Amino acid sequence: MAAAFEGRVPQGHVLSLLSANQNATQAQLDPETGLLWLMGDLPAAGVHSVKTEPEVVEGTFQVTADAQGYLVSEGDRPVFFYQSAPRSLDGRYTRAGYVHPLYGLDGRVLTHDFPEDHLHHRGIFWAWHQLWVGDERAGDPWLTEDFLTEVENVRVLDGPLFSVLEASARWVSPLQKDDAGELVPLVRERVRIQVFRSTPDSQVIDFHIRLRALVDGIRIGGSENPRGYSGFTVRVQASPDGRVHDLSGIQKGDRVGESSPWADYSGSFGLGGMISGVGMLTHPSYPEFPPRWLLRHYGMQNVAFPGRHPVDLPRGQPLDLRHRLVIHRGGFEEAEIAQHQKIYEMVPARSF
Image (cartoon, rainbow, N blue to C red; front, side):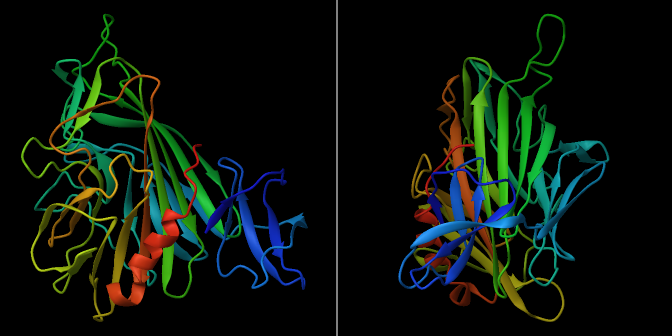
C-alpha cells in the first residue's frame, strides 16, 4: 500500500507509523515519487504520528551487475534479471531492455526467452508491432526487426521494504538516420521496476514505463489483425496444467480482445507438481482501463494496447503505463488476485 507523503526523510532511513498507543508499522519513503510504502496492516487506531529511525537501515535486496545486465536478489534468492545489453540468437532476434529470468518464490524460472514457437518473445517485455515516424515504418519492435532498445544507464535505489531499478533507454532503427548517417533517437524510454519484500506466499513487482517522443510524427500500434497484440507482455513457461483466469473466470480457450483489469496464469513450473503463478494487474491510470487482453494458454499474456489502430505519441506528452505483477504460490484462488487489484487501484499515480 502507498500514500502521498509530505516532508523530508534522509535517504535510506526507515519510518515508523505510530498509533496512539505507540504500536509501530514500518514504512519506506520513495524519494522519486513522494510515496510512502508500507507492508501489512495499519495500526488499528489509525496513524497518530510518524517518526524516522536515527540510523540508516541496510537494504533487503542485492543488485549484482555484469556485462549483460542486473540481477536483483532478495537475500540469497534471485528475483529477476534486467537484460540491459543486446542479446541475440545466432545474430537474429536482437533485443535488450527487458526482464528475464523472472523467478518464483521457490527459485524456479517462470519466464521464457527465445521460445521455439515465437523466437521474438522475451520474458517480460513491452514492445509495439507498429512504429511510425510520419508515414514511414521504423522497423518492428515486437518482432525485433530493424529496431533496438539501447539501454544507456541504470541506477538502483535500495531499502528494507523495496528496491527500485530504474533504466533509461532510447529507441533506434537503421531505417531512421540523419544526413550524416547516424541513427536518430526516436523515443526516450524510462522504466522503473519496484520490487517489494516477499511474504511467505507472494511477492509484488511494479512496472512504470514512460515513453516520450523525441521527434515529430511518432505513432505506435499493435498487430494489424483483429488481435492487435503489442504492449506489456509476460511470456511465461508453458505448463501442462496451466490455467488462465481473468475477471470473467477461468478461460478454457484463448482470450482475444476482452477487457479485464487483471489476468493470472497458474500451473506447475518444473518438477514436484507444486502450483505457482503470476498475476498481472493494470493501474486505473492506464490509457484504456480496463484494458483488452490477448491471453494464450501456451504462455503469452499480453495487454493489447492500443490494438490494431496506432495512437499518436506527441512530443512533450509522455505516455505512462503502469502494471503490477504478483508472483504467488498456489493457484489463482489462493493468490486472491482480484483483491490485489483492488489494493493496486488505491496507489496514487505519481511520476518519476
